Amino acid sequence: MTMAENLRMNGPGIHFEGVKLTLGRTIILDDVSFRVSPGSVHALVGPNGGGKSSLIKTLLGQMPHSGRLSLEWSQPPAQAAGIIGYVPQALEFDRGLPMTVDDFMAAMCQRRPAFLGLSRHYATAIGEALERVGMQDKRKRRMGALSGGERQRVLLAQGLIPQPQLLVLDEPMSALDEAGIQVFERLLGEWSRSGVTVLWIEHDLAAVKRLAERVTGLNRRVLFDAPPALALTPERLLTLFSTHPRDSHGSIGP
Image 1 (cartoon, helix red, strand yellow):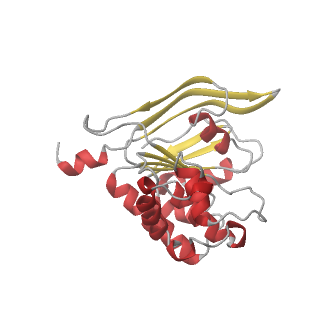
Image 2 (cartoon, rainbow, N blue to C red):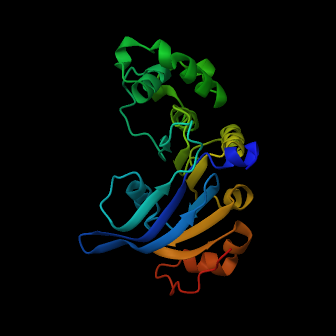
């Protein structure tokens, strides 16, 4: 195996097999089965209420489910395994709180209480992460004073510490302006080149077609799983976003 191939195997594969989730009498996920290849950028698309975020929460251990869900780590033995980063769609908090960007990063990334400031152990990594998302010059700004796009960049930054091997993204582009989208696309390219496995919920289908390596369409169950050019056809998308999806047995392969 070459060094480049070794890097591509840094992130884990993910295997969803017959995953089911029911809340009360409502079926949220119905026999969901697909694989995410190690080191790939894999997009998850579908309508609101189709189960995308619930599947992510299941992966992160936050939702009860039946079926099998496994992470298949394959990094070199010398490296520590199991580092998972998560970037939520939005940050809910009291905007009147006197919490700066540095305070937020400290609270999210270190064990030391945030009111004691940044620890030396994390200060460099936090500075580098904020620099990568273009927020280094706004570290002393209150989180509540930032625009939605700026807060989303800070969320991206916290997802980088520690450097993840699996990164789970829940509509990270939803609040970004054009400059922020460019930052995100640059980061996505860096993650892909370094072999990070990215599972990415996204509603911008043009971005998915341009940036993802594989796409799974989910509306309670898997309706397709294929490379973007085969998955994002008008017929497939019509089926995916219909209120009552048609039978999914004709899902397409590679």
